[in-house]
Amino acid sequence: MALVVNKKEFTLGAVLTVTFFVLLFMMHTTTVISIKGKSIVHYTDEMFVSVSKGSVYFIPELVETADKYIGKPLDVKIKKNEKAALLFEKVNASVELKNGGLKIKGDLGEILKNVLKDADAVFKGEDRGLYDRYGYAGKDVIHQWWLSLKEIEGVYKKAKKFDEIKSLETVRVKALEPAFNFCGVEAASASQHALGISAVIVFYVIYTVWWGYAIYFLSEGVGLMMKKSKEKKEA
Image (tube, rainbow, N blue to C red; front, top):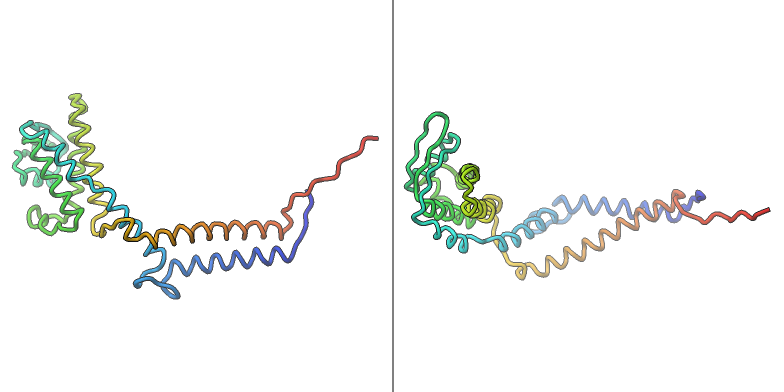
């Protein structure tokens, strides 16, 4: 290996590096470039989140899952939670806060359908009515339902009710979590942002190559080049 200093390549690498970080700064601020008053990074993040929301809406099919449990009794005791108690009480379940626990009796199917109804409202940004009903903001309601179902799953696990566990977990993961995470986000299809998505992908490829060449020329400029050493001749 031999060290070789190449001023021309080092200068080119330095220029590529500086312009890379200047553009990176510009993408994170609205000082020079902005889209609808937002930085490029902020705008593209919102765009991809919006497109993602359109692909995680499973609530209608989960309602069919809840229908299977109509008439099936729920009789469990979970950790004491006054907020959760109010939620179950409002969906016609019997609740009792006693000895550090929350005892719940009700119709499992009806409870799940109400959970999905609340999740649907929050997911669609139509959750103002939830505050009137429960006295809590939409995301707080979803959070309490999530915690409660998780607790019930633990009880069912001990009872080896695996079918119920799977259904409750599915409601948590496919309905409550998307509702909580995408609350306030407007859903959009990929076709609506086809041009923007294509532009971001092309730019990302170019920008990645840009940084790669910056590192390459800097390395060559400071002498990090591999050269084949001369072979030693035998005496």
